[in-house]
Structure formats: structure tokens, C-alpha cells
Length: 295
Image 1 (cartoon, rainbow, N blue to C red):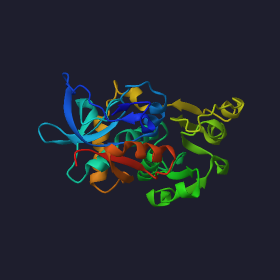
Image 2: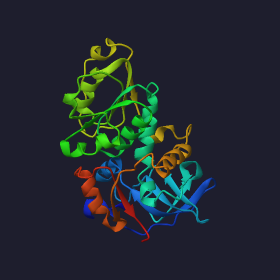
Image 3: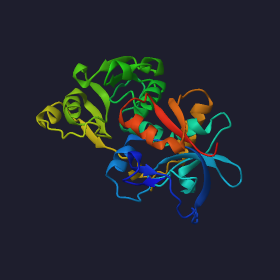
């Protein structure tokens, strides 16, 4: 799968050179991939020939089932993946469930680690109806936090309490309290407002800007309130020091044990990629969309 400006949603299936694993890499026959908003945004701007894709689940030549993550070019029938970015799949986890885990699940797990211990903490999650948000709600609840979820509409808020949210708010304007940890992915006015809603010794993690708007704020609203920490995050930055294999295995184990729901909102054959991208871009997906390969 690569960018073709003339194709629907600017992506098309094309023949490319086969993947050739280097030392330390494994050849994976891909059975499922999932979509992330970051990929969709990049496709809209990328040059012809660029190959998108992060999340994969599939089979090694040995027959072992795996889940993995790449920082690009994962939407293909075969990919070469560093072993440190792969985890073995328990039998109880389907390829579709596994493909939903890597970027959204890893992001949620790692940004939750920036704050105080979760037990007893107050955690606020923006974009709670999306892939990362739904994982973050479940993981924070599992860690013993009091979870407040922000959704953009009543429709996007459906099912969030069942995942573990103690409170569900519609829009950032409804936030009046202070929180130990704020997970912020909307940017713009949402980020500006939520900077004033962090506990004096709390942390706000910025990991997206779905509004595509700049943020303006009075710095006094932050530093005069205490030792507030503003933390940026991008998933791929920390891999050299902390490869994702162990966290992928942990998430897959939770799914196998029935302790984490990957929130697969739909499955489509990968030939229908344009339809899947359109649905994600229109925000009509409550959870993760998965594309399947090879029947």
C-alpha cells in the first residue's frame, strides 16, 4: 500500500520489492493491520510513493503468531520487523484484536506512566472516544485511578463508562476540577484550558493536536499554580532505550485474559482501505478499524 495522489483517499495497492529481513529482524506474513489518525493525516500530505502503516499482526515463517509495530511501511503483505518490536500472540487473541493494540495501546500505556502512581490518582483523558482514549480509560481504571473522560459528542461518549470511566464530560469546557494527570490530544483551546486544570504537582501530557489549532496561554496560569509538569510524547521517540516488545506482550496478555478490550469497531478487507480511511477521517469510528489480509 502506498500513496497515490490520483487514487481514492490517496492510497492504492501496488507491487513493491519484497521485504528482506536484516540481522535482528523477522519476516512477518501480515494477516491484519489497523489504522491510526496519525497515518491518515500523513497520507493527506505525503509525496507519491510514500508507504504508510504502523500496526501489524501476522505469522512468522516458523508458524508462530505475532503482533508488531513499525514506524512506517507496515501496510503490506510481508514486512521485516525488528525482533525488539514483536511479541508472541497468545492463542486467545485474534489477529484483528492484536492489530488494534500496538500504536494506540502502547501510547496509552506509556503516557499513563508519566504521572504519579495511578492508584488513587485523578486522571483526565481527552479524545476518550478514540483508539488511544479507550485504551487509556481501561488501563487507568485497572490501575486504580479515578477516570474522567472527555468526548466531543454524546455519540462519541457511548460505552465509555462501561470501559471504566467514572465520569464522562462532553467538551473541554465542562472541565472544572483539577487532576493529577491530564492526557491531552486535542490541542488548541482544549490544551489552553486544561493547563489550568492540572493539580499543583500534576502532569499534563501532550500527545496530539486533533484540532490542528495553535495554543495560546498565560504562563502565569501554569507556574503560579504549583510545580505543574508539561510533557510532550511521541511513541517512536523512546524505542532505542525502551523497545516496545515487552509492553506489546503485556497488552496481548491482558487481552488474552479478558482484562483489556481492544475495541475493534469493524473489520474490512484491506482492498477497502479508502473506505476505512474515510470513516476514520469523518470520526465515525468508535474504537479501532482493522483491515484483514489473506482471507
